[in-house]
Amino acid sequence: MPAPCYAPRVLAITDTLMAALALLVPLLHLFGLYCAYRAIVYTRTPQGAVAWAVSLVTLPYLAVPLYVVFGRRKFVGYVKARRAGDLAIQHVGQRLHEALREHASDFGEVYPALYAVERLARLHFTRGNRVDLLVDGEATFAEMFRVFEEAQDYLVVQFFILTDDTLGREFQRRLAARARAGVRVYLLYDEIGCISLPGAYLAELRAAGVDVRPFHTRRGPKNRFQINFRNHRKVVVADGRVALVGGLNVGDEYLGRDAEMGPWRDTHARYEGPAVQCVQLAFLEDWFWATREVPPLEWTPRACAGHDVDVLVLPSGPADGLETASLFYTHAIHSAEDRLWISSPYFVPDDRVVGALQLAALRGVDVRILLPRKADHMLVWLSSFSYIRELSDVGVRVFRYTPGFLHQKAMLVDDLVSVVTTANLDNRSFRLNFELTMVALDVPAAQEMEAMFARDLERSVEVHGDEYERRGAWFRFLVNLARLFSPVQ
Image 1 (cartoon, rainbow, N blue to C red):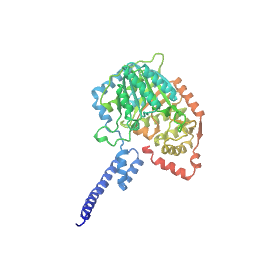
Image 2: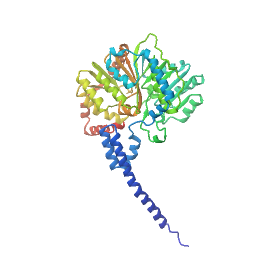
Image 3: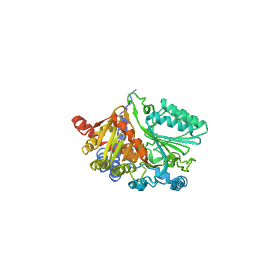
Image 4: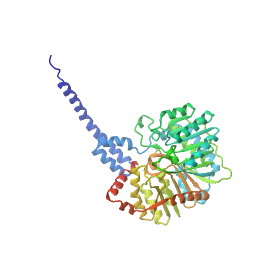
């Protein structure tokens, strides 16, 4: 019996594949041209537009998939969802704005430059607030768990990262206990930040009655590749009366239990007063995006007896019409007259922030930037050296924190303005992340932050631009290569 001949079948399959490739290759190049057009029209910076356009035209096989994931300029769907909830969310927002009128601050007589920040936030500075710094994880989580225990009606909780470790399980246990006690608990987490969180962790919370939802950036059929955006906010609100906001996520490393990272330096803050409702409004918009639901929350603002700190709540994110976070930093830097101290774990500022820092130093402002000495993201750490060189030449002083990893995000402007935020001083926080910034106008609050900065600076070493030169040609090449990737860092 003759052996079967497979040659005709192989040839037929080969011809089919070649025909498919002959069709696919020109289609991919055409799609690359279309993406290049969109990059030129919509990319945030001229440098980014040129980089994307050249790559998409010359290497569409590699660049097109990357552009689909990383090329979006704005977070699609968030504003549309908010508008779809007009009868619910806008009603809440309008009522809150009306209720806040009697708590509006008269800060303009002292610091009129901040009127622009109010317009940026679309919220007013409110008086009658209390602000307490929570320095490092021990203080933050002790206060957080106390707030959990004291909540009587509801808790809203939002984090970028939740980890199934010792602290994470304590956090889980306490939230579940409050839910079983009849407190309504709403937990919102970022699906990318919590990508390694086991499903069983969330299932246990749901079984206890906690309403757990992912922020879900990929929601909707047009957003399947919308994964370059993050909800980076860290928020707790109890009964509409107390809010916690700051830099700490939930994980053992935030208590300094990670041997590789060492002691963890971070800052949160506790707020009471009318500002709490403003924090809650930012959470509500995120929750509505994730769920299309509006939970019943307390929206009556109340001044905190015996305290009168002016506070502005500044939400920012990639759904904003303006680049809110970047504009806020730029304006705050330009407003500084005597002192500007900034702490950030990542330092990849855009050109206008770099220019603002240089001008501040040139007009005699005491500008200090506090960064970590230890690296947890090598690309970002390398990029920072190129900016240090540019800034130190005009008198900006840069310090590296030595005891462990510095993750705090704070700013002190002159002797009045203190800022605690979830935002880093980088492109991702400026344009790709949903963030929350708390601005306080109060001399005692500024003095408390000044003391905190002073302790950190004592444990830091000053670095200069010549460190970039002394490390050699290979290091300088890596630094400048890393800076090329700053638009997606």
